[in-house]
Amino acid sequence: MKETSAVAELGDDWCDVTADRAEDCDLDHLALAAELSTEVHPAHPFFGTALEVIAHRLSNDDVLCRHRATPSRYSILHLTWSRREEIGGCPTIDADGEWRDIVAYENAVDAALGGSAPNRTDLSESGPNGAALSGEGRKPEQGPTGQPRAEAPRRPS
Image (tube, rainbow, N blue to C red; front, side, top):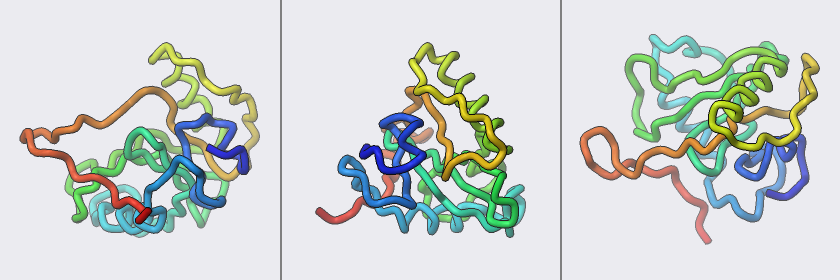
């Protein structure tokens, strides 16, 4: 990932969708917000909440969102890419809170996975343009029924 944004401090596995496209990201960034809007259903805690997708992980389906009504609030959600309204707790909310809460979550995940986290010591309330989930989490190639999982739309080459 190009070192062009605050998201870059979180490591190479995250792409800042608010900056110029990263060289190693071929995901259609417009599709992220569309899929999030599709998946969040009336019973979901964020239904009706204005969320701005500001980053996504390159290795899985996590997105980092900023709450438009409360710009100091961030959430990490895991999309399913079902391309339909979800039920139950999907998309899952992996982390939610102010910047310092996201950073603490990230550091805990890194520690649990034994990974080496980027230096994330900025615990200011306002934070930079985003935060992101770290670690080696990858979605399985097959869904629970053994069928191939749907993939996020890719940008044409």
